[in-house]
Amino acid sequence: MAIVDEVDQVFKATFPAEGAAGCITYVGVTQPSPEQFNVTMRLIAWEPDTREIRDVKEQEMWFPIDKLEQRSLVRFTEMLRGMVEVLTRVLAHQDLSSLMPHDLIDFRPLHLSRSHTKDDFVRAYSRRSRLGRYLE
Image (cartoon, rainbow, N blue to C red; front, side, top):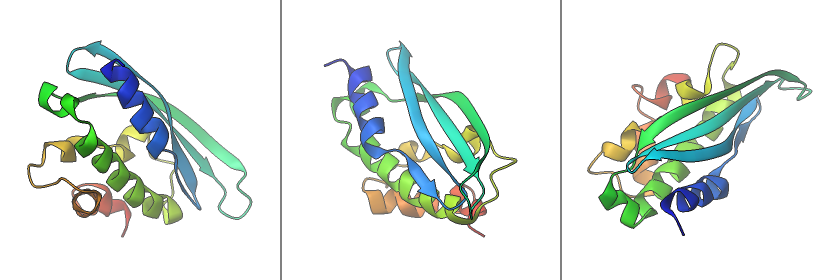
């Protein structure tokens, strides 16, 4: 199986993240170069009480996965699981009208040498410099 197909399966198994204010879903992934991937994500905002859709925004973002990380996508999978857990809390009460998918999808914690488990990534994403700023 090609690495892009494996990454696709990880995204499909992890997303969507959903809360009272909306959801963020996975659309697709491509691999334009050996260590670069482009992922398309969709942010859907709705009225919290009625779930009537207010806005849909779709955006493509790039992220790197180096050759070492590609050998085993375990750490990448743990990062996505941690991201989704924090996103679920963000989407529970955040006004999404001014946000784009790239505001919520952040691959930078993959570069943190001390983050390996879902809980490690939840702590990393909960920091104010990342998704934590939307939890206040």
